[in-house]
Each structure stands twice: as structure tokens, then as C-alpha cells.
Length: 291
Ligand SMILES: [Zn+2]
Image (cartoon, rainbow, N blue to C red; front, side, top):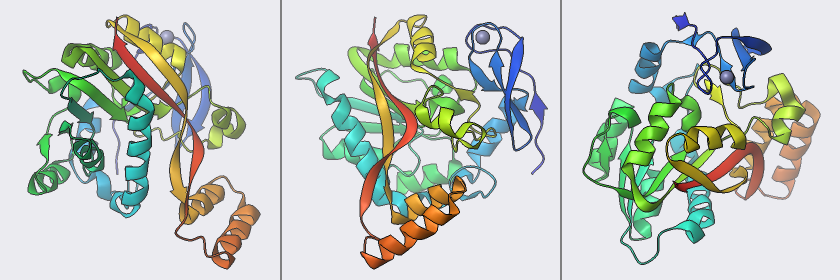
């Protein structure tokens, strides 16, 4: 696929001065000389990004997710765990209207509905939206900044989404607008300050410069939040559930070929193919409230 690229200023401080950090798939990942925010520059244009997400994002081999549905069981366990972690910060004694931004196959919507919540999703992938509607989900084929509704939400989730969004302040402004006075926003995103990123450096699997165009830390998220009337009320390290296949594939990705073969053998011998484990991925779990 041919990509059209363009230079963009730093989302956090608007500076154009950068220091090179790593190059991946031919894309420079740079650090802002003014505020240290990390982003891909030059990167695929906003217009082309919209196109990528609109059509077959979940069936592409160059980027996106292949086999998203195959990991349904694991993804559901992730969403259950993350919603449970945010539960102490939820508004009490209120019916919950929830919005899942980038709802993909709707698994998080299912988890929310099982809690008795009224759950709605935003999804850019056109084919996915058709399937979601067939499944009876309430889904809007809209980006976050183009979404309008009279609803205010008690819970808004962005699980592995904010790093894909081009204009971060517009996203935070919209979150603040859509959020109920005592509602919460829950985010999971790759953490550029994570041990995994520092350990694996250029090979960190979260460096996916076609689609992960900006890389956050707790500190940068706090700045975006604050200037849009939101504040962080909880943050922690975050991983995801993986099965034997997930772990072996991830070890291979990091070139631990011997280890990946060894684990593969152990999983086969002990018949652990269908077991799953919660493993660190160098991500950050954050809950926001209005200021
Ligand atoms: Zn900056």
C-alpha cells in the first residue's frame, strides 16, 4: 500500500523541533525537543488514516488486527478485568450509560450490557458497523470528534484507542463534553515510560507507526486532560490476557527463538494450550474524572 505522509507539530506543545528516537518500518519516531512527547513524524496524513480505519481495518495484513475475533475469549477477559479495576471510581446509585470508543467487534459492549448498563459504541470500520447492527448493538459510524448526541455518559472507555487518534486535544475536549458530571473516562494505552519499552527499545511491539502515531505517559495524559477540564484519579500498569499461542508469538517477535520453542514444548507437554495468563504489555491504565 502506498502511503501519503506529512509533517505535524507536537500535539502536546505545538513545537516543530524534534530529536530522532527510533525508525520503524521506515517511519521516524521522534521526541519533541520542547516537551519530550513522542510521536511519529512525518506520518500518514489524517485523511489517509481515516481511510485505513474505514475499510477492512480488521482484515488487513499490513496493519490493524488480523484474527481479532479469534481472541474473543481473551479480549472479553481483558474488558472484564479493566471495568472491574475502574469500578471503585464509578458514580454510585445511577443508571449507567456507557460509550465504548473504537468498539471493534462489540465485545466490550457485551461485557457492559451484562452489567445492566446501556452501552453504545463508536466504530470507524464500515463493515464492522454493519455486523454490530445485525447483532443488535447500538453503534455509531463516527469518529469521536464527529459524534453528537444529547446523552451524557457515566462511563466512556477508550481501550487501545487514544494512540490512534490524530488530534488529541479535540478528543479530550469531546470526552469532557460527553461525560456526566460525576462520570469516568477509562483508558488503556501503550506507556512510553514502561519498563518493556525501555528494555526492548526499537523492538517494542507497541511501536506500530502506521497506526500508533503518538506515545503517551501518565504525565502527558495529565496535561491533555487538565487543559480540557479532566483530571487523572487513578493510574496503574496494565497488561492483557494471553494464551499459549499469544506468549509464544510474542517471544518470537522479540527474537527469543529458543525461549519461544521451549515454551511451545512446555505448553504442549503440560497440555496448557487453552490456559490463559495475564501478562504485562507495557501499557498504562488510567481513570479520569471532571475537574
Ligand atoms: Zn512538544
